[in-house]
Image (cartoon, rainbow, N blue to C red; front, side, top):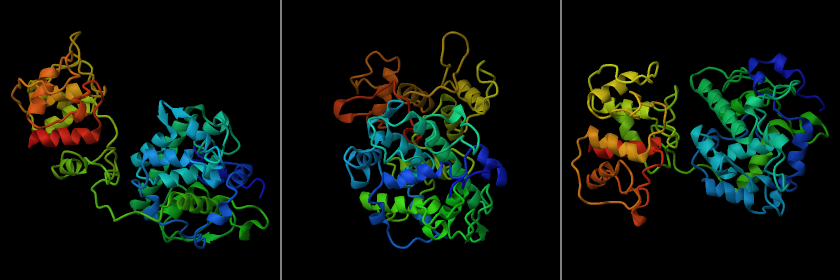
Length: 429
């Protein structure tokens, strides 16, 4: 079906200013099958064009770890030939492809398998066995910022940027559907709508509505004659192959966590305590995500402490927090004597800087008036200005360090939101 995506940007919605309709030319979708020669043998069950995949499987964000994704990319499975994917030999910002895929999947509450399948359908990068992945494919891996009949935007060039953009948009479609509305392209669960290859599709779930928003083609052979599979039929075939290879047969027991991205986190009880006590409603407007791996900023930490301790308002203490959503909380913790700022060179707080584990120890020690300890708990904080606070934190049972076996605290590492939840919960106990 030559030219099947032509003109879609002007026909449907402004979303195509960011994404093309399906985002790849048909030749690239043909490549997706050519680079997966056993895909015909991998299809599972019968294709349901109204459902494609179950919602629960699409949203199974805990399905695979970064190590499992990396192993999938490296191992010479039949569909990856003998060399494995080119992605297995590359890093992005010092992180493996499996790490950035797993982290982004978790960030947006998506199954890494969904992301892998989407990636292969759009750019065939997983099936590419070159020594390194072609930059031209990496820069438009998901078609983000690549409207039809126009050059791709440099803003979204690069694998990690493409990955984050695709995750963010997918989550936005899901949020629109959860609110009872339609996606930006007009798809809605239970409401019929025509695809560009002439089918009337009534999405059975959010997964189908999202997938048709991204690629409004069924794309099976019934609609394409002798043409190879493309569109959502191709997605289903690749999904089936990868699921079989990975041994995936659906999510485990249903997760009833307050936030969908903390189901497998060791910090989940502390995160849910934060939510139950009203100290957090999550990291985005949907109140469904906590972003457990995101770093906590100094401004955010001030806000958590001010609310946890119900601190009264204080005078304007710093010069660099004007306009910060956390200014009132920053002033409150300063008035309470919990902080004197981030610099001796003027009254500055550095609200947007990531808080370190050493700084966290100082905040908590001052906030909860923890007694000093003569016990030197760790071996890697001897030169840290926060050593006394770190020892006090350890003596109070708030921390056992970053590596208890080696007696390490890692005072200069940033604190994730999940770790912060545990720090704060223990301190308040």
